[in-house]
Image 1 (cartoon, rainbow, N blue to C red):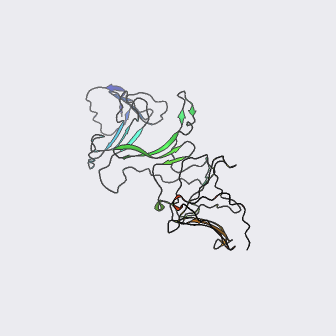
Image 2: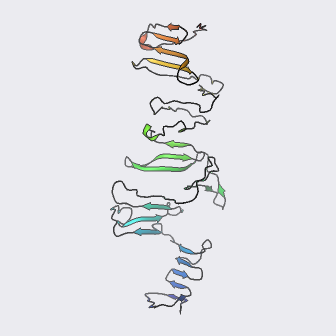
Image 3: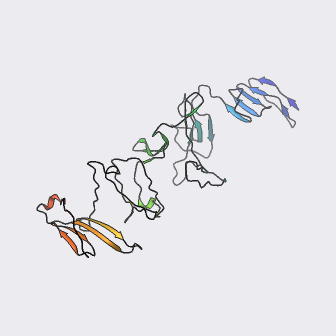
Length: 315
């Protein structure tokens, strides 16, 4: 047994063959506390650690950890040495935070970083209390040892990329779950299922155009004996608020069809057709033999219908 409880400076060699080393070892600014099984670099105590490694960088703000490999040569030496494939650094230098940075050679079809989880049992609670096998958590704090809520509309998660010679945000999630995407969803990205989207009551959204990205896309109520309502303005009908329904037929003429389907949704109980051609407009109710043609004296300006009054439809 070799008992070492001293400070070693300069170069030192401990020629040991078998046996056990006991006591603390201090080499320069490194301390091996064998009684606590903690290895310190530039520090001597850490109340939050039972066993592990503590590194105090002092005023340094570059790498606190680096992983290297002789078979890696990524060439991005403006960011890290070419054989470095992972590093841990502070995000802001003098305020903390952590950035885990991965470096990969310029090779196609390989992920440069992965987060992988094995095990656990997935929670099925689809509420604010739900827990996931992989989670990202964020909270503000008040600087005095107390957590604080995220500010209203504060961004908690984001995806950024290099595009157009600049770093830009492409997807953002804020504190109340609102999602902002700098792009479009295409039909190949959507799940073609009646349960693909759940439209819930939301706060007011203005200046938004919603597109049906799937040919023949529909907005339906998935609950029996319920309504799908489109309001212009508030639920009570805001002043100066309009609901515009626009559409075109194959010839490019204006056409709108409002259909009440039968129980099997395979036929029509009633169908209201509003169409406007180059010179005429028609107003039809199927199965009632009613058709209203409204010629216009100015085809190029479109057709305006107003004050049509009450039409009694006979069968």
